Length: 206
Image (cartoon, rainbow, N blue to C red; front, side, top):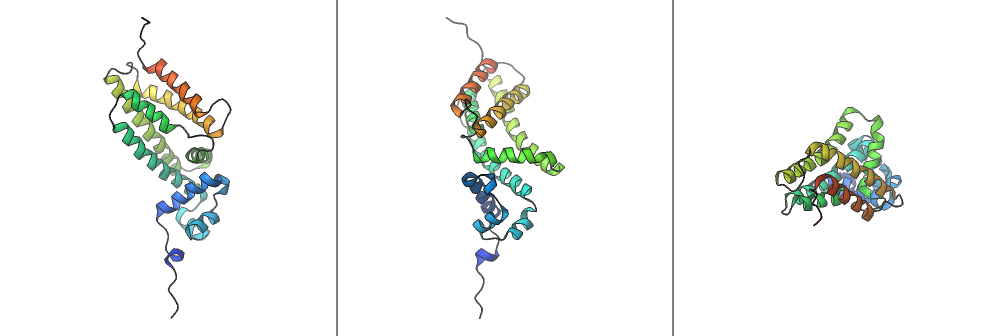
């Protein structure tokens, strides 16, 4: 009797395993190192089989970004629901938002997906907007809480969240690309100054 083929060669790995392998490849070898053939070898599938699941590399990248964002979303939810002041949780939000450093895999992927979105269809663009919307809504809620508790000035939380996220996005691109003078410590200092200047009450000198 012919031995039964191994499960590894014939059954598709769980979707999360595929996406985790894609992110790991980006972390180790960059986006240029992520190919359908290479990913297939990592998980024991043919590139044709992967194309059946994802159709295009653009879809693979977007699903990997959504998977990574899901993990960040869980971490963001945990930090926003913990105790402490609104300012402490805002600092934690900023810390989670910013890249760890040059070639941060999540931000490398984020930049590539948004670059490709110029030619993306409505569905892909809506899914990208959903990612951004989740970060924005959580920040608006945090600012509104801080305002209601008297920790932050009575600003428009939605407008202030849009400005703060624009600042974070701009600096994050610089950190991810390794632009000199905009390392993570410098960026954290700039953002802290912005928060102090725009959200906190000023106290006259004694």
